[in-house]
Structure formats: C-alpha cells, structure tokens
Image (cartoon, rainbow, N blue to C red):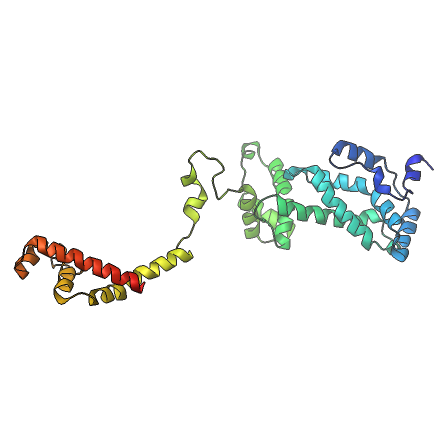
Length: 306
C-alpha cells in the first residue's frame, strides 16, 4: 500500500486536496490520488449506503475528483473560470456518490458522469449571460451542441464559405434532424448565441445616457405618477373647468369663455381684448383686469377641489 492510498484512510481525507484558488496545485494533487478498484468501490459504497459512513463517501469522492477536472476542460470555451466549473462539477459528483447503489453493477465513474455534467450545464446556463438563453430540454440540447456542430459543418464547407457565420437553410435542416428539434428552434438559438448582453444603463459617465437602452426602452405610459397626472389633466379639461367657471359672475365667465374656450370659424382663436372692450363699452385694460381676477378665482377653486 503506497503513501497516497494510506492517506485516503485518514479521518479528514479532504485535507489532501489544496484549495481550488491555486488551480494548478489542485489539479496536480487530484491527479495523484489513486483510483479505486471495482471491489474497493463496492465495499465503500455498501459502507456508505448501509452505515452512512462519511469516510467511505470521502474516499469515493476523492478518487473521482480527476474525472471532474477532465469534464470541466470540455466546457472552457464558454468563457467561465475553470475553478468554478470544477466546483460545480464536484457538487454533482457528491450528489452521485450519495445516490450510488454499489449492487447495480455499474461503476461510479459512469454513474457520476451524468450528475457532474448536469451541475456544470446548470451553472453555465445561469452564468453565461445575464439573460438565460435556454430553458426547455430542446433549447438546452441546442445550446450545448449547436456551436460544435456549426464548426463541423464549416470544416466540411468550401473555403470560400469559411467566413460565413450563419447556417444555410440546408445546414439548419441537418442540425435539426441530428438533434431531433424543429428548424425554427435551431434558427432561434443561433440568433441567441450570436447576440450579446446590453446594459440598460450607461456604463460610463461621458454623457452618453441618451444612447443607452434605458433612454428609449422605458414605457412611461403605465407609470403610476404619469397615470395620476394624466387622469388629473383629463379632469381639469372637463369637470374641473366647469366647476371653476361656476364660481365666476356672468360677465367674468363670458370673458374667460370668449378669450380661451371658444374658437372662431376661421380657427383664429377667441376674441381679443379690444373686441370684448367694444362689447362691454369699457377699455381693453379693464377687460384684462377682469380676466386676471377671474383666472385667480378659478385657480383657487381648482386648488380646493383637486
């Protein structure tokens, strides 16, 4: 029994593995941990299942950490840190160990592969973009296969087409047939993958606020304050004006109506001060004074009823 195998029997087997913060040291350490034989794996699995032996669980997890590292390398193209991918894969490995049945005749490496990939997939989908790009089963399948399939189709295409980024209708049909999805879903996922996240608000302070989406995407029609203001304006233009006019004497009311609330046949607006002065036999200045006083009364009446 070598030193590494002996070390796996210690009470705290995780002490053998350094922090993922030092990724190179972590990978070197897990690759040095010995693999378990089929007999050892079955024995440890029974100890965990029958007795809840956490030391057995630790040995099963430790002996398969290198598998997580290997799987994580397959997903480096998504631009996420490998350390994070490994951490999520380790969560999947621990879930697999917890559910592992040693009497099914299946090695843990085959059983754990599904759980490791499932956790890594979920992490990528949640963190690759701010907006989740795949929610259904078919969308997930497209997300994790479309890019590699596009590269394969490009390698088969003529050299003149190598700079083409989008799929042709024939290639869309090929991808849809191989992945057993609808062609429309292939086109939609290709569009999602080719796009990028756009910040709603400007990321700099250089006066470019007018060009940020927040400046033209905001729908203010249903904003509560705007709705209250619109409702108040509607009231002022109908019932509010009627109530305000009711507090005026007949002459003042007519002057306000003729000046501001009526339109002549030639669409030139209401009567002028001089026209009203001729009607009432007073000066234009006197009509202006009556108008100002009437406006004050109306404003005060509106304030008390608002």
